[in-house]
Length: 332
Image (cartoon, rainbow, N blue to C red; front, side, top):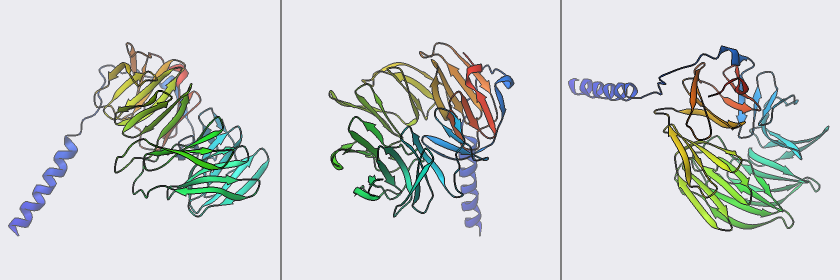
């Protein structure tokens, strides 16, 4: 009995010690910013490029819009060529203007992009391919390796000229030819055993910028360059790439992934971050919003409510916990 008591005591001390040793970002000076926040509906679901509010409104990167989404469906992606919504049973709807087309996939769709009369898709089991909206059939399908854990920020496929770049859940990207509906190339990005999916993919001039939670990669005719960081978020602004890392560092790198400037906000844990109109915004999970200039020589910290729910940045606003923060009213 005594041994059991000692074992239980040891476990409790270890757990409590671990909890008490966690350290938090504690800014020296904090600004009040009640003038920059108002109430709104809570975010109830989100994808990499959109979110849904309690009242059914959709948040995209560009702004807020009304979209009639059936019960059980989630917002996946929206471009000028069409909007994708899907449920967890493999049902998917493609919305173009006033028309709607339904697709049934064998597994839930978690990422996708409409490109002309095609849907480039990624399913929950790491299957990917091309669905032809004209013939109402799958034109190409393939499957990546099985994965057991993913970061929820699954990136959507993007178009690069006549090609589609499909980010997978196992640290690879697949290049599909939209003319022939064929796989033309596979590129290895990262080989981590867990949380290794692609969370960011954008084109910067003629360079492809790709990130997993563990690495930033640039791919161009000069080859592939890598920068290993534990990444919370990535943002592009002009020709610069901004990296927000899990140790509270914000870095600005060029398209060769060479660090130009960086600053560490000790113990900050970023919930969400962006660059907007030349200002860098990073929201710590305790509700501290850091606003800095591009080279991190000036900054201010504003205090808001703790982040304990979904968050999303849409247009000029940060949405979380029923709050909407107007970034245009905050400066460094």
